[in-house]
Amino acid sequence: MTAGTIATLIVEQEGQEEQRIPLRDGQEIRVGRDEGNDIVLHDPGASRMHALFSASSNGVVVTDLNSLNGVFLNGVQLSGMKDLTSRDLVNIGTAKFRIQLASDEMVNSLSSSPASRAMTAQMRPVSVSVVVASLDQFQRFSEELPTEDVAEVQLRWMSGVRDAIEESGGSIDKIIGVNVVAVWVGPDQKTLVHQASSSLSRIIQTGESLSKSWKHEATHPLRSVGVLSSGFGLKGALGANSRQSDGGFTILGDPINAAFTLLALRGQLNVPVLVDSLSAQSVGDVFSLTSLGRKGLPGTEEELEVFGL
Image 1 (cartoon, rainbow, N blue to C red):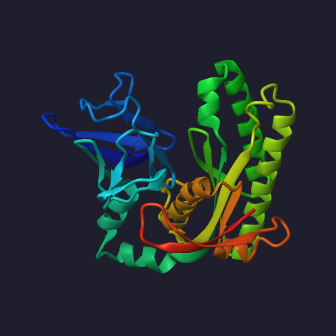
Image 2 (image 1 turned 90 degrees about the horizontal axis):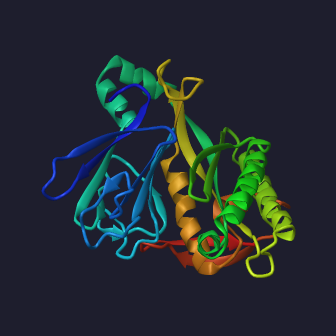
């Protein structure tokens, strides 16, 4: 795998040779029946713009672009978006997609070696908080309002969101459509949750402020929405060629996937903010949260206690 590559996207379509597409940080690959897509599916069951693969320094996310027949991950229909591993199989119609993460190749190349044991010894647990923020009903606005008006307010909202995240100690991991994924990583969970929740509070206020000066407010009021999930990961040095500037490497898959699951659930519950139980314990006075009870997670048989604003 070439330097700077986050992962390789492996594509199998009936009657065609296997494609192997290197993915770099910030790169997006759109898949669908339309000829303007990066990967064109010659399948009548595929939507014109069916799905999106987005790469960042923390991995690759697949997003269902509101397709008619859905995206299937390991045989289960995807709800929203999901952070992928090298073990996952994505089915879109008759086409199959897999990813090969560069981080997995590095670990495999070091296995059973002194370097592998040294790397494992250097790994340390870290706390992780993840915020996914979005503009509610934005897709409908894009379809019903003048393109220039929608583009202008999106840029202003994105600018406010970026400030809210970075000034609260977080970093933007990826932007997927109008969904902004931000992460906070460090040793103290309570501090991270407070920083992340403060950022999310500012993002909510950004939507309210923009809506007041939005000329379409009467029919299309702006509302920021978001979710907050917290968990744990591992961080360790992988040397000078690591993709992070400080030579570090962080495994964040589970907290990010938990946030994506909350995002799908938030839409069903129609609340502006949804928080998992671990985060709710440390939010403090930033939000006045109410337990919404245990809810079934979209696409799984699991249940999770969630808290809403």
